[in-house]
Amino acid sequence: MDTWLIVLIIVVALVVLVLVGLALAKRSRVAGAKRREQQRVQAREHLEEARLRGAQAEKEQAAAEEQAARARRERAEVEERTRLAEQEARQRAAAAKEHATAAEKLRAEAERLAPGLGDGHAGQHADGSGGATRR
Image (cartoon, rainbow, N blue to C red):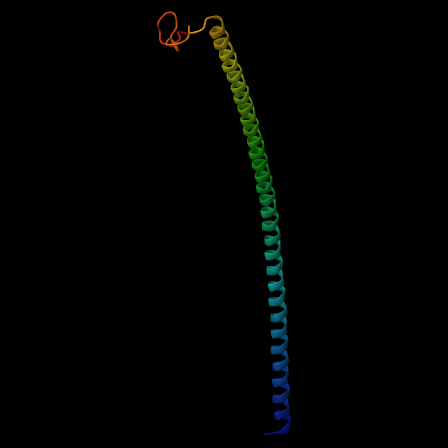
């Protein structure tokens, strides 16, 4: 074989290798660009989902705060009703004590005015009802 044919084959092989290398580099650049574009699209999707989830989180937080405020308000109302009921119960107990004291004073006055009148008739009214009162 002639030398020029060997050189020509080597040159052609080198040209083919360079062309293959250039094609692979271009393919790599195109694949890299596609990958970067896909990453950008995915990043945009993530940002959109993050924005939606953030809005949902704010909405849930507001609902939770509203529910907590409602619970505190209801608890305060219950405590107020309880306080008023206890105050009314204390007032009734005081009134009952006053009535019992007045009744005892009246019994003592009746005994002083007519000793022995209440003996044997304790709890009996003049109508014979045995202490039951009609209302």
